[in-house]
Image (cartoon, rainbow, N blue to C red; front, side):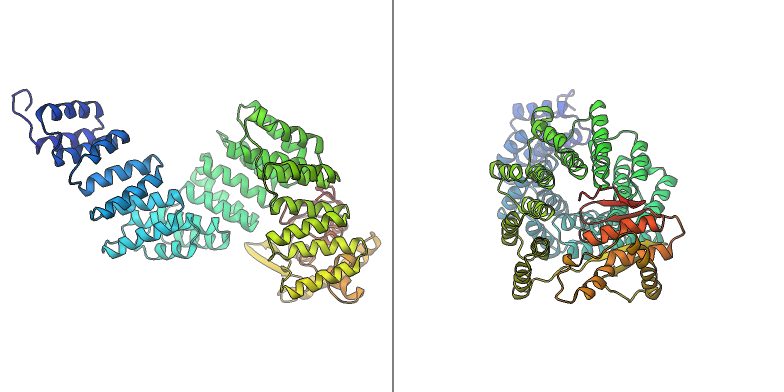
Amino acid sequence: MHSLGVKCNEFAFPSVFKACTLTNDFRLGKQVHGTVVVTGFENDEFVLNSMVVLYAKCGEIADSTRIFDAIPRRTVVSWNALLNCYVQRDSFGEAVELFQDMIVSQTQPNEFTLSTMINACTGLEDGRQGRKIHGYLIKLGYDLDLFSANALVDMYAKVGTLKDSVSVFNGIAKADIVSWNAVIAVYSQDGQGEEALKLYLEMQSQGIKPDAFVYSSLFNACASLSAYEQAKQVHVQVLKLGFIIDIFAGNSLVNSYAKCGSIDDAERAFREIPERSIVSWSAMIGGMAQHGHGRLALQMFNEMLKEGVAPNHITLVSVLCACNHAGLVTDAKRYFSSMEELFSVQPMEEHYACMIDILGRAGKLDEAMELVNTMPYEANAAVWGALLGAARIHKNVDLGSKAAEMLINLEPEKSGTHILLANIYASAGMWDGVAKIRKVMKDSNVKKEPGMSWMEIKDKVHTFIVGDRSHPRGKEIYAKLEELSEPLRKAGYVPMVETDLHDVEEREKAKLLYHHSEKLAVAFGLIATPPGAPIRVKKNLRICLDCHTAIKLVSKIASREIIVRDINRFHHFRDGLCSCGDYW
């Protein structure tokens, strides 16, 4: 047309720009833009709208915005092009501002506009704005297409409104793998591993073929449940489908085995990941630290450095935790003091909290307090919690009282602070202080969180609480505990009644201690698993000193490895010893 000398007009230019956009021929598009200026069509709104789309799709946001601002009457396509360009560049705030301008201009958004804005709200984690966009979809009568529905499920999940996320998912007529991935991830991230696994089974029953992303969520679900057997079953399916080479599923598998109590399986999975990222290394180092293998974790860290992988702040938290669990104070000081110089990572609150905990546990209470007073952050609950724990270990009443006071101000609803302080008073023989704590808890209506323990046997999770007799095999469990009582006594077990704060006789306290949830779970493990098989228990609180002492002895008496995952770490009991070295 051009070679024949036929001039383009305001109807031809938009088609040429669209062709350039579709073929990603930005160079030709700029040449046509020059022709537009020469032929005098640079103010035509149809031509300008098509140019906005071209420049936006090619990522030239400054030029696209400049042309957009010159359009007297913008079409929804122009708005969409610029909005999409902002979102693709992660300029979510600018996208929201532009959308608000669009509404003020009385341009009606279409489904593409709203879908783009859902992604912007997801990026901002702005549930309030996201709910408004959802409202526009309903108000304008648009059917919720699969793409928009999936985006909403993801958005509500990211802003922490699980109910809304599931509600949108349930309204999808024909969910695809993206929909299922999103809602399974929602439950997994919310700590509802059992629901995530149920949804996976439902997805399979509907003939939806899984992908690597769904397995990543399932491994995280198994990790939250400490469901070792289920993690192995999911792993078998991953191997069958060949997804183990996927880095996301591989990293989640490492994390899952570590949190299910099998650090050996975690390391095997780690070694099978062909291209290990910093996430892979951090998961493995963190897992070893939690299992009490501090020196091995540091060896793994050095191996990572030799492979040229630079640590991030999460890796260095795991390194400090490894030092903490193994009592490696000198190593911890070296890593902490050099992390900015060697790795360009500025110490954050988590690093300071770890270092304060390390110093406190080692009895260097003055050094710990000096670090609290000189660090560039306000001491948070993690810091005061570390100091309270140190005060309990070293029976320092003054530090315990100070730390507890600060913690109660920060987290008044948590009962653990009161319990730890009462234990400090009890160990110092300050029974008036114990009575005062009991009264404060009663007057403030602070309820002690009940200790609970779980065991997974043959795909079924068994739950225990102190003194519970409701289990179907309750009589056998209590009979096993009775059977163990004499061997335990001969091995030197004496109930630590001073750690129990119930206002009852010492004999009753001893009975309550002996029927703690983790002891019930271990007794059940002894009668429900084959001789010699490891017993894996999960506890929602920190394992108490009495149970720790008793389970060490049981591991030797019964010739069993007993693995207890409490709120802080793993304890591997074997032959009368614990992997924590009684340092936890």
